Image 1 (tube, rainbow, N blue to C red):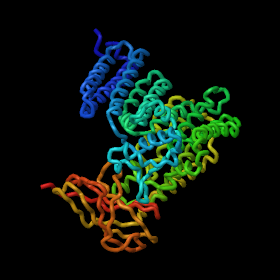
Image 2 (spheres, rainbow, N blue to C red; image 1 turned 120 degrees about the horizontal axis):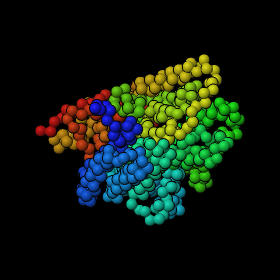
Image 3 (cartoon, rainbow, N blue to C red; image 1 turned 120 degrees about the vertical axis):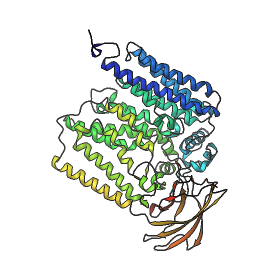
Length: 561
């Protein structure tokens, strides 16, 4: 008589169980998208039918995953993946179709820039002020600068708007940036499903459905446009210098050039790819100078080809736009190391030192790649975000955008050459440790060098403490130079909501070294008071020095009677 552990069924084999469990998670994500769509009926009543359709589709898909004979069959894989694409297109597409505004200023800027180009105007010399009409409560969406202003010009390479211009020319007028970003993300999923091993198709499906990506990319996340090109760039990147690789010799550099022509984020991949290819060539005892120059030339040439019309049109305006974050520093923001300052734990941050720390982390990554290449060949794309975790702006997208391309690289590159020996192997730990110590010292200096001390001495409210109308602060200049601060009150929102007006009650502004001033801050628009028990802080931004200074954490204790 057979015991329970001897029973064999189609679902008891390990590969079957893995595939069935993985596809069950995929269908669970489809069900979850239907549940999320349920609350959207106020935007369009049709969601009342879409939501239950997605839910029942996800439930049935989960059940059938355990009923089909072979969960890894091409029919089931393709059918499941198509269902995922359709569910995302329906859910997120309807969201775009029923929304009347953009959710980021970057998306609105791309829209305005594309329209300007089609009317014969240089987007880099065209004011982006009309983007305010494409945003709901524009103050909550602007990208603010340390000098008390906000970005009002194109600040990305030309591919950011050039690739969507044909859609606008063909008559797409309603939120074209969001549509092309959604399509780009779906294309990324299709690309991953094609290049990943067939038994991992479910991984591409889960990524497509992941709220970390599909949510932002369907709601103004313009990074979606470069992600499929970055995936192509890192897929089999180690064949790029191989004379027998055929078409793969130019796919990687050209795709990387296109990605770099859309946004600055992929620029951080370039030094890692070049160093890794140099190591590959050296380990294979091949001449590396000409092939490496060819790769770099194709990448740069593709970038310049896309941007060349605008460089010729007005080189100064183009350069100013592309380098705007360096020429006109943006307020610190994001989920990286700067969070310690943003959330009032350090009293602020000196941004130049933090940028230096980030640069040293980048150098440390390159040193480590050379020194421990066999161990890092497959995983270095996962580590690139570490360099973006440190600077003053480390938005969520900066930390997540590399993952799809990193997966494509890890699952497609060859094994590392075992014969590689790093130059000066005994010194590699010393060099790496020295760079990391320098990065740590710079970061520590940054987080302890805020130029101003802020102390909240009073608040004013109206409407039974529901409306915050003013904050009174004492500001002391701890630095050795005159500082001209600009103020915001951080009430815990996801994005800075505009600079507050300043009235000097005592002292003077700008604030000279060692002096203090009593200031009354008032919001430029209606501002809800924090909920009872919530923490909040006052922020002061300055350009000289480039820094954020904060008050200590404030605890809101007003209770509505």
